[in-house]
Length: 125
Image (cartoon, rainbow, N blue to C red; front, side):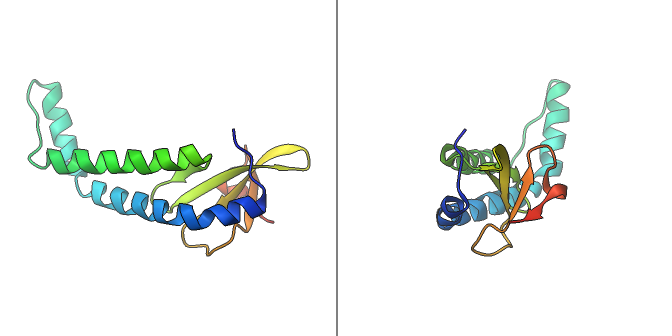
């Protein structure tokens, strides 16, 4: 696991922001396929199935997977597709914590939380 300083996380935000926007866009578009995908899945269980929009749906799944993989390769943890919520593992007081940022929070990481606490346990840096 890569560990980030606050400065490293802030520097990386410029590269991460377009990836997050792509993830949010793909996720929003995928939700429009939700009903058709569910019907196709149910049909497949009964020996049928299929989706007219299947190629577009598959393309969005690949885009989403690719973008999430880009974050993972950078060492960034994706927590919520809709909010664009990500965590940067970091050290604080001798233990691993998570520097927390979401897409609508500006150009700097300003929050952290214990690994077990999650988003609800966020504290200002």
